[in-house]
Each structure stands twice: as structure tokens, then as C-alpha cells.
Length: 324
Image 1 (cartoon, rainbow, N blue to C red):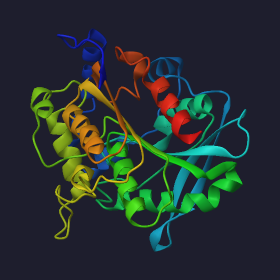
Image 2: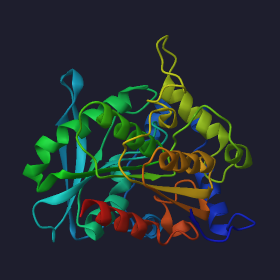
Image 3: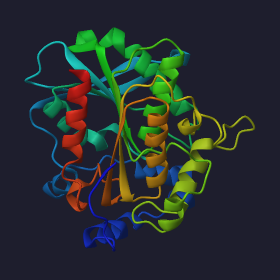
Image 4: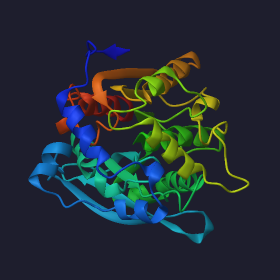
């Protein structure tokens, strides 16, 4: 595992970010209507660009749709660098937000950066959110979109033979789940997976969940609220023991090479570490990098997080190596 020296205290910028994150309150205390109002696409400003990184100007961004089960269609946002040559490798991205918040627009800075720097066609999936749509709705949208994309990406300038998945937090969970499903159900073949502080095991109370129960950024109350929203209350609701919820409990053999990035000040730190170790034990090449002074969510707020300057470059290098 790659790691810089650990910090004794939470950096000042992270403490300020934590205070800002508390203004909206915890999802555990909010109704579905209140949660829906939080799903507002922010207007891009210079200040927001300084926090999230700018949207790369050399990338074309287009919204499209992909058919999924039930006769429905799921929106996807595709990013393609103007300098790309056909056909470009394809990265399918699943955004974070505890399966409850977040939208593809929030990830324009990250996805456009990866698209530009790795010369990729990036496709971000706008899967359904809880509590309106509890599990496995997000899984169904994610896997159906992933299965349907190989037939569509040639028309978008992408190469269906060079395909990888990525996601952060809840999106990392969905990416990990999808790698297991496509392995078991006949493809498409994946060349790699990038899991950024992923939620992969909701069955145990590990040390980092106790250590960072009050944050910064993500608290134990938040994680409990997100998880309750995602599972729902139906009699046939999935449980934490289901690999569709906790992919760490699934079969890990014959999965694509992985890059796992974890944050040192994150309740999800330990499960991300253990997932990388478990992948290696199953014979899967897995790089693990810990950013010890960073909180959960650093991929979305690099301008306010300490010691994460190289995390996007690391992803770009991994994707270039495995997608060619």
C-alpha cells in the first residue's frame, strides 16, 4: 500500500469543509422531499471551480439515453476529448452520494479530467436514487447500462473491446458489484476497475467507522441514514449480507485489475483496504493507495483537501496502463 506520513490532526481546510457539510444536516434526519430538494445542480462559479476543479474545456459533453429493463431508459452523460482518435477506450463511471444524493453533473470536473488526460470516452450513468427507488434499483440501472453500452459506444467513437468501470463511494460500490455480475453473466469483458473510497462491506463496524464516527465530512449517522434509505423497508428488501449490497462478500476471483484509493480520515477506510487485500488474495492484481490526510469525498473537493494532488494522475496512469 502506498501511503504518505499520517497527520496527527484533521487539517484546517478539512475542518472548514466539515462545518460546511453540516449546514444541510444529516440525511438520517431528512424526508424524501427534503432529500429531493438537495439534488440541485450547482451553478458553476470560479469559487466552485477552485473547490472541485474546473470542467475541462477540451472535452465535449453530451447527454444520451441507454435502454434498461422494464422498457425504461437511463440517462448517461458522455465525455469525449476533442483530441481523441476513433475508437477511444471507454470508462463507465458511477457517481457517489450514498445511493441517495449526487447526480452526473456534480462529476463534470472529474469525468472531463479523466476523459482529457487519459484520452477516454467516459460515460457517467444517472442511475435511480433512494429512498424513492431502494435497492436493487441502482444496481439494475448500472448493470443494464453497462451491458447495453458495447452496442452503442461505436457510434459515439468508443471501443467496446477496451472497457473499464470506476466510481466513488456508493458509485464504487456499484462498480464493484458490476464487475462481479458481468463476470458471472457473460460480459462485457472489463479491463480494469477504479474504486475510490468505496462502500464494499456494510456488515461490520470496523475500526475506522468507530474512529471517525463524527466525521470529518461523513459521519456514522450519515452512513446509517444512507444505508437505511438504500435498503428501504419492503418485506423483500435486500440485506447487508447480500453481495449486491456488500460486494466484499461476493466471489472475488477472475475480476479485472483494480485500483483502490482510500482516505485516511474516512469511516470507509478500513473496508476499502480490506477489499484490496481480499482481491489480491483471490489472485486479482490490486493497487491500494491511501491518502492519509484526506477525508471522504476528496475526489469531488480536491481544492479543499490536503495531500490529494496526485490522485487523479494515479487514476489516469492506471487507465492508460490497462486500456492501452
